[in-house]
Image (cartoon, rainbow, N blue to C red):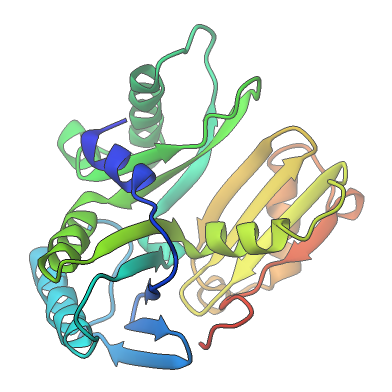
Length: 254
């Protein structure tokens, strides 16, 4: 895993002064206790790597939001809209052992899935949940330029990054904490104005993970998309338990 990715995974401090920053396609939202601040972006972010102008707009809005926070050590937990990231299932190859080998295979598979040239692939930071003994691992790629901007701006205020997650991961973790027993097959969905993420897993491992455009743009409904993604892994929706994740999670405001 790259040096930047290692930093993102390992930065986790005490949560006594935690602020939550959510970055969507059209706005930034900051939650601190009962206080909620929203700022609209001048231009909606597109899927893929944000360009120079988009990053400059994010910086301007984020600096304005951070300027309204009290001085002193703060910890920011950050979520990114799933449409701003990439996600897929990494097929485990025999003999993979080190994090560096896993990262290399993840980048190769991402290039095949998205048709990236090597230079384009290098603009993403890939994170793989390499669970032991599983044959398939969920992989998520985050825009490197955006992550570097966040680290720079937040660090300039003397603050720290706690976690960086997608909305789907945060919502899943919040709901999974209440699960008692894992059914044989579960289909998870998170529907927002930015996009629709669908994931499928059995009792042992993840089988599918994909973010689709918003349903209105696709001209279809959620059940049809769930059936389609189930068919892609040889399942019928009727044989699966369906769980709709919530965003924002309980205790946060849209």
